[in-house]
Length: 430
Image (cartoon, rainbow, N blue to C red):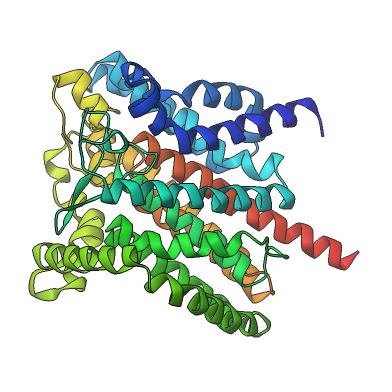
């Protein structure tokens, strides 16, 4: 391995570690630096893109993202909002972060993928302990101090309990973390990663306990998607189907003692209350189907219903992010809408956003098709890992820095898992 690849590996690991810890840095360790630490991973991206540019330029999708980012800058400064810092904040998403996706499978191998899985699942143990403290301790306690000060870390839950944020600045990142951890756990339970470490069962218990503790419907849906991917993998590969039943038995064996814990019973009551209230509020008489329509279908179709009111080249990249709105208007909120497609179409306009969103859709579809084909060939890992990065590539909020970090890191690992399948096939044929 050459020095370039060694440096890139260190940079990508640093990106991942900061993704997990930057929220703690911003709200607990260096609260006075909370604003500049919002982009603490950006210097890593700059160096990584500089060093990895020869690899990035070999991929047509990466070149497409770079082209969108470059074009968006003069467009925003001339026919858009014209604010330099807002433009740079928005353009960095496409120019600095998205290209990292294509470096992961270039410099990492199967052993690195296993290490990422081990580290992610080990983190689940202290993370679950932390959200347990955040769940039970008052909002005035130190662990519930957020960027906005005392009591700003939690978010509305049910029965007087609040949704925890863990080491992150907001609750959505906790759900994203546990969703990915669940995919990696599925890989272990079904024997894809090989030998299971002894501490894995503790991590499994933490993942099961996290659902009610987080009081998050999104996390429950994410676990359901991961389970569906595992079942589909079993259908596509009969050899793999035999591994699923033992995995289900293991989960049940771990779940039984977890359900006897007072914390599980208490948090489950809050979770059920939250589920019923939020589902009734968002879904109405349609229930869960109504929630999916309002939170997924509306994010896909809603932006196109207002295109006639948006300038041809948009209002300028960055203006739809919370940071961009604050820099330009000195107020908080989502100027163009909270959904990713609302923001992107409003910022880039119909032409550029069509190309950019099309790239993300095409990349997600391509990786998904390859994952299905690999599963049929007896390599189910890419398909098991696919649900969350595929969903985030299509609809994930890249305007929020932590969410962006999860999209980049785990889409990169998804692509890496496809590379490892090719390596396995080459080894078996040699």
